[in-house]
Length: 298
Image 1 (cartoon, rainbow, N blue to C red):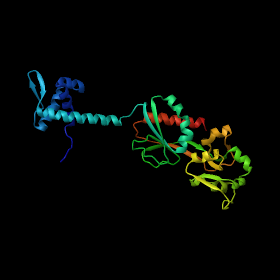
Image 2 (image 1 turned 90 degrees about the vertical axis):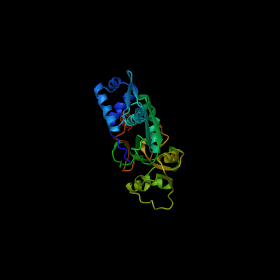
Image 3 (image 1 turned 180 degrees about the vertical axis):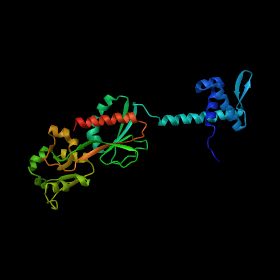
Image 4 (image 1 turned 60 degrees about the vertical axis):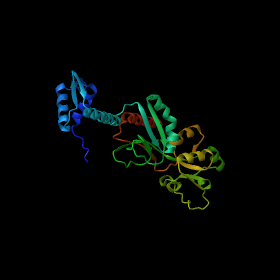
C-alpha cells in the first residue's frame, strides 16, 4: 500500500478550517483569500469523494468524515511542526555539548571555563572527557577537541593551539638525582605516553644519545598526559609533556623544565564541529572564546 501524501496544501487549509469552522477565519490565519481556502477544500473533497463540511443554519460543521480527517491531520501537522522546530537554527542561548581528550579537558579547559560562562550566561556547557573520536553528526556532541586531523565529512576543523613537548620533573627529583645533562636521565624513571611521536626514544635520538637499549633504564608508560603529570608531581621520574598543560606549575616552580631541549614535533589540538549544526551561533561563540584563550595563554 502506498502512503504517498497528495494534496498537502489542501489538507493544511482544511486542518485550519476544521479548527476555526470558518473559511474566512481560516483565510486570515493562513494569510490567503477566503476564495483560496474554499477552492482548496473543494479540491480535497473531490479527491476524497466525500463532503467534509455541512451547514446547519448559519453555522459550518464537520461531517463525520471531516471530523475523522481533522483528528488525523491535527496530530500529523503537530508532528510536522515539532520536527521542523527540532532542526531549526537555534539561538545563542541553550545547551552546548563539548567533548575533549581527558588531559586537555581536565588540565586546560576546565580551569578556564568559568570565563566563557561569565561571557555567555545563557549558554549551558555540558563538558565530557573522551579519548574516542566523536560522531559530530549524531546530535550527541556539538564540539570535539582532540589532537588528530579531522577525517569526517561535512565538519569544520580549526587549530586551537600548538605546544612544545618538554621534559619535566619535580625540583626535588632534579636535585636528588643531580640532573644536569641529558644523559643523566638514563639513571631515573622515564615516563611517557603511548603515542609514538612523543616517546623518549625520539627525544634521545634528537639529542644524539643512543643508550636506550640499556636494560638498566627504568620505564613507566601511561595512557594519558594527566596520569604522567600526576606521577612527576609525586616525584616519580621525568615525563615528556606538552608545555601548556603544566605552564601554571612551571611558573609556580612546583615543576621544572629540564634542559632547553624540546621534541622537534610539537603537539597540536583542534576543535571540530559539524558545518550543518543547528547550534551554529553557540558553537561559534565557544570556538572564538577557545581561540582567544589559547592566544592569551600561548
